[in-house]
Image: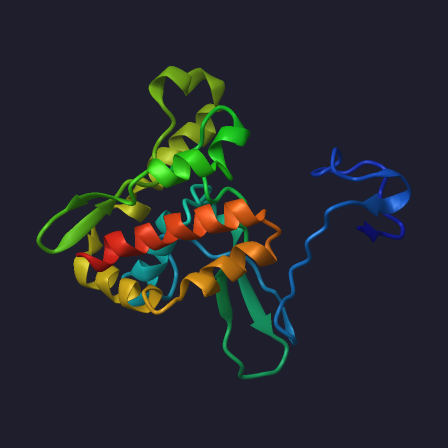
Length: 216
């Protein structure tokens, strides 16, 4: 638990998670690299890495963890305070991961849903030179009126992230991911506070997705 001095009485986000007097239970903290500060956001379409092997590998990674909330505001540019140092580009918010390949009307179904994550295949189509991921999915038509129109059309506009990924780039990121051991993958879930049973189940599901990529 954490106590925050001077925390506002009214919060824009997370008000139902905060206790009284600045007490916040079940806190997880994110450590940023030293000497770096937030320097803005980057755009999925317009960035210095668009079209590179590494960027396409990132597209695969978003599908692998099922991070369907691909808004530009969830991407951060970190600038080093020391002159001449490179900028860091990161996906800074992956809070919708490890569930469905797209948003459902219920957030409890959409993220952190082990049952759906385990049974959903990563790759939808394999072609000679490229692959399509089963991600990100648009909201189902029978749920259309559960969403704001702006969100619905945004989800349509970012579907390209998981489509037409060069096969050679998908195999490249698979060659890196396949070097991870089950323990290393499990350690990531343990560090995030998952239960022992969920650590085992999620680790196995991630390994199966890596296996899909490795068989390309």
